[in-house]
Amino acid sequence: MSESNEGSAILAVGAILTAPYWLPVALAVGATVGAGYLAVKGTSMAIEAHQKAEANRKLCEESQQRQAEYQRRQAEQERKHQEYLQRQAKREAKHHAYLERKEAEREANRMAYFARITNNVLRFREQYVGLLDDLKKQGLDAYIPNEFEYTCQQILQIDNQLANNEIESARDLSFEVGRSIHGLATLALHAKKQVKVTEQQRKKELVESQSAFIEQMKQNIATDKDDNPQAVQSAIQSLETLKLQAYLLSAKELQEKIIAENDRVDGEIADETVRRAVVKSIYKTLKQVGFVVSTPIVTDEDVLIKAQKPAGQQAEFAIKHDGQFKFKFDNYEGQRCKKDIDEVTKQLEEIYGVTLSDKKVLWKNPERIKKGSKELPQGREERTA
Image (cartoon, rainbow, N blue to C red; front, side, top):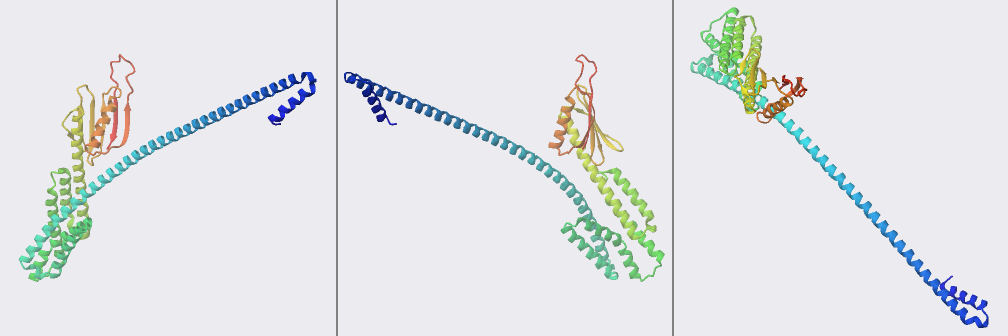
């Protein structure tokens, strides 16, 4: 029912209930009641509109708060994700650097090995060329044309192998040339004189040529005596034994034994070079971190380095022939032992490139238990590099 219809109903009621004398009063009362109803109705609608507006405002604020919380969580997740990516990148960079360092070490060792073989091959090559020139000057090459030309081709092949970085093949071919070239002069002289020799005599001459080659090997190895005197002396003695056995061995067997002996002494000399570098690195590092270092002691198996701090802390290193070493730290109190070990190993790795592995803690005391204890707890760690 509309507002106008409600007002008409009130007027009709007033008209029915009143007598002619009361008609003016009834009309006035009806008009007053209608106006009051309209006022109440308007107030109710205003309150309802206000409540709806307030509810909408709260809903809007809640929506904004939820949106802000969602954005905050998204930002936090993004921050954590970026931190994870950074940590992952650091780990990958560290691992990559480790792989590059190990590859560089392997490449350096390989290059040193091949450089030594190359120098030896070139040194032998010069001697071979000198022997061929002597034969040619004496005119003996005309009596052994096939052997002479074959040896020249072998020397050219050695040059090609070196140019193509076929280092070990060049070394093997160089040994083959050395085994035969020292017999060319004898063979040429015999051809010139057209002397027929017996099988026993030929064997004797072969042994003499092999002995001459062994003597040459001894002279070449002796040039490295400063790098590893013991290894060189052992190799010379072994070659001398081979020289005495040359008559009983075939040419192939003798060559194989000579190659094996040469490889052995090359390896020992390379190991000694590495050990000397490690000894110098450890000696300098200990001095840099405050130790008083004693003169290194050389034994049959190790080089011993002993050092001590003014407060009594001790460090001892034992370096083997192949460069591997173990060390221990004694007379330390609490965690100072670990601190010195970390500082020494860090300098060895970062400054001198010495890589440590196979860490093994033999024994280590905890912090001093009694404050007034007269005995200093000792800590000792041992590692292998």
